[in-house]
Length: 178
Image 1 (cartoon, rainbow, N blue to C red):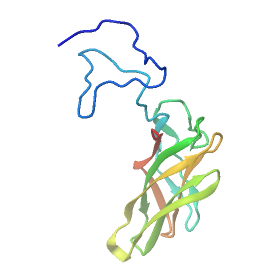
Image 2: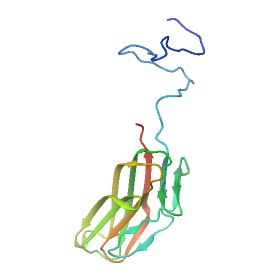
Image 3: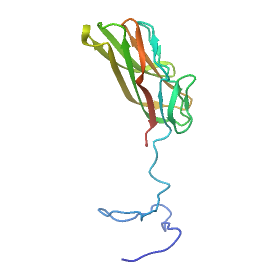
Image 4: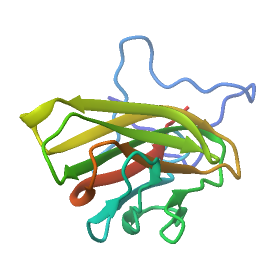
């Protein structure tokens, strides 16, 4: 095995540098790091509720994810409970909301992803009679977001008095590497 020691390797034509050939594996030495290629899934955030609270019956209501669990680029707004990225691209957005109804009854529960104040996508579950008071509704989607646009989560239930539970409710997302 030969060893080349240099600080810079550049292609002679200034266009493409190829390391290895088809089927080869290029390995970094122990302790070496890579930079300038690949990518990161940032910005990224995860938020939760600071406490459980009630929502109105048969009314679409913004969910108050008011506590950051992490926020890589400080783009999640805990006051307005929204994510506003500063770089355009495709983002994986997901949420889960725990609905705890006061009574076991037929009910529809819906979680929505809103983009710039309008519904982007909704996901629902329906329970019948005594099949349960509480349920977690999840939603995920890849959302094209432009600079200045924002994402929020809304919920709906027609089960009467309902509490949005803080223990299982989360809102999170990250930019995908394109």
